[in-house]
Each structure stands twice: as structure tokens, then as C-alpha cells.
Length: 117
Image 1 (tube, helix red, strand yellow):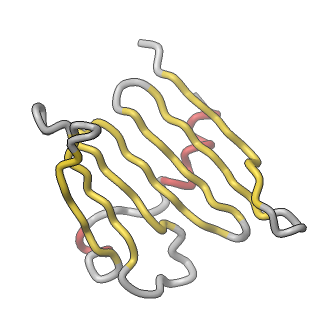
Image 2 (cartoon, rainbow, N blue to C red; image 1 turned 60 degrees about the vertical axis):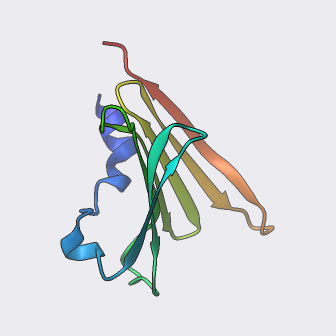
């Protein structure tokens, strides 16, 4: 459990709400029939402050239950891109992609945590 908290900590440092993000991000929403989910996507509408690391996120909602099915977050800091995919009630996956000295990106870390209730 300690490892889990440490691994997801970078994604928990930003409060996602309309009070602090409405001026910075644009919401796009649609019913994606290929995955049977309402998709809410958020992308910056202008240059983000340097201290703000969250760059994009998607929320997938089940149209029959109106419950969040999956969340995907992307944050960028230093020379790394971190991605978190959260599948409600099942698992989460964190991928860290680093920029190498030769300019090529490589996967530095790939962690999958499954819930076992």
C-alpha cells in the first residue's frame, strides 16, 4: 500500500475542479459508441503556468449507469511524461516516458496495480 501511495502521488498534487481550471482548459464531450462511453476530454486553451504539470485528461462514463468507468491523466515535468490510466474497481497503470540524451523517448517505468478484493 505504501508503494501505491508513492507511485500515484504525482497525480494527486493538482485539484481538478472548475474553480481553478475553467480558465486554463477546454472540455470536449461526446458519446463514443465504439467504446460505449461518454468521453469528456480536457486540453489546455492557452500556455499553462510552469508549475502546472497536468496537461491532459479524459474521463469515460458508462452511459447506462452514469458511473465513471475509466480515467486517463497525462502530466509533464522536467524531461518526463507520466501517464495514469485508472480502470474503476479493477486496476491502474502508470507509465513514465523519459527523453533520452540522444533525443529518443523511452519507457522508464511501467507499473500495473490490480485490485484483488
